[in-house]
Length: 511
Image 1 (cartoon, rainbow, N blue to C red):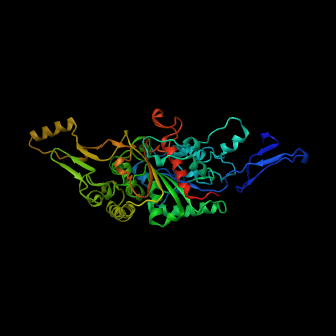
Image 2: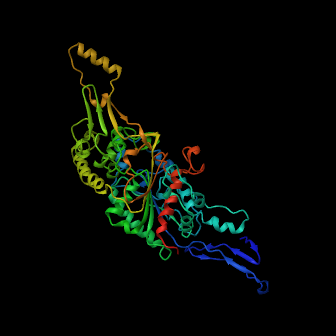
Image 3: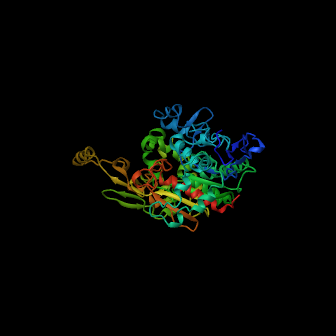
């Protein structure tokens, strides 16, 4: 350890032992030299921050093997898996959270906090969150720079000091971080934890487990807590888990505040599109890129179904346009009009694709919609923690599904076949699912959640940022467009997240 000495002073860095306690290593000096040992005191009081991933964002396993993880052994099983195998593997009743996933810079925090694996980082899907979690922890631990300044002539700013006074876009002035708020935020430590959960199961069940996890984290820092509460940072569906625990399970007393990223507050028509056409992109290749592969999985999984638009989303988001038909649904109740509809061709669920005893599977699906889905969505509507901060995607460059349209599109060869049959006095009956294509509205959003799915006005919502983010990569480190971001090396969403945490901790008295 090199100490910078001036005017008979020697500065000593804090060292952390295995219990997270501070001590110092000081070399004794002769009394007549009048040396003064200055022991630099770091913040010691802890405010835990818990990150909650979105749908498909937590690793899953069954008793035999990995099921959902960003690893070669996990991913190679999916491209050739048929619908029956996918339904079997992605069963909410047989899967559990797998915390053995890859972690970036596991030992970077030393003894200041428990290891990153002990803090649950291995439960997060690495492709989506590996780098983001590492950078978020760095930004929340930048107080080390203040100690390092005692040992160098050129003083450096912490990341949070860089954020001070900086306005993102045209946001309100009160969202800007002040010097006093930054200084207050530097009085605490922020260990970042990850709450991995089984996203196939009901978010209400995950909320119960979140409560248990929060109590465990509080116990881990017994005697070190600045306040007996945590801060939650959520991605997508993780926001619904957090809000249900906070507002419907009396969890608010354990939460200092919540930062939401790209939360589908009112639900998203994209959940309907997934059921009818499969998932898009690389994730679609894994989980299922058509209805035959994906519908049997989603129909048995309450969590993804709870992303469907609720009543508050409004009517008319599903449009049917054909040569003899023009409709806009739902009229007023999406559950009755779409989700529980058994006969209309544009219904949400195809009984014939459910596999096994399809009549029994349909009955179970109906109960799931009535009990797990409708009650969860409608009971949560409009409820927020009193310290809520959120960002969402609002770019036309990320076309999203504010509405969907079944548009009649007959291929030329089908039209010719119809004409031949009609000339012969016969009628060619075709399934609407063969003659209609499901077209996205292409409205502004993040590629999954449209702007219309985000409620931004509530007495409990303290700060909002509309920005340019991709849904899966909402917490990506680098900005989408460096020329339009506040910092060329950090996304506005990440800056907003750290800054919101600092705003939330203003409630906690100085240690």
